[in-house]
Image 1 (cartoon, helix red, strand yellow):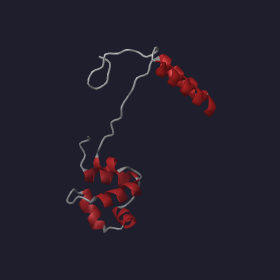
Image 2 (image 1 turned 30 degrees about the vertical axis):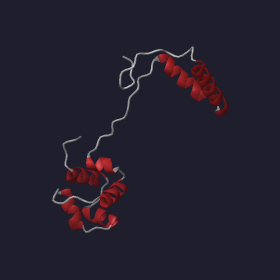
Image 3 (image 1 turned 120 degrees about the horizontal axis):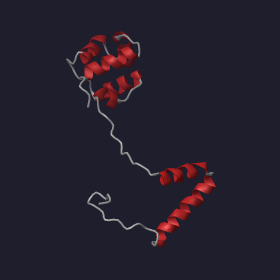
Image 4 (image 1 turned 45 degrees about the vertical axis):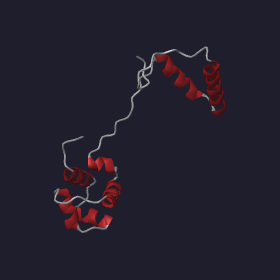
Length: 124
């Protein structure tokens, strides 16, 4: 999470958008002094106001609140990357056939890797 307050982030996104407090306040249907209180961290807006602010500023509510999105990163080896590259070159019918073939290999059982798993399902 960043070190900026909600009000600092709000003011930053508003100025980046080139808007005056009055303009943003009118756009979302609040009084300019209410927006000023939000930017100065005197008051906190409710969820509906945060949604309106985010939409007007072209950001997400998470952006305004300083919530970082943490995705899962999966590293692929060169063979896996090549498989994906080849798969993407196939038309819809070819992709379906490739999927079915892989499913058949998995269901056959003899081509399955045997791994020791931890409680989180990762290879030990």
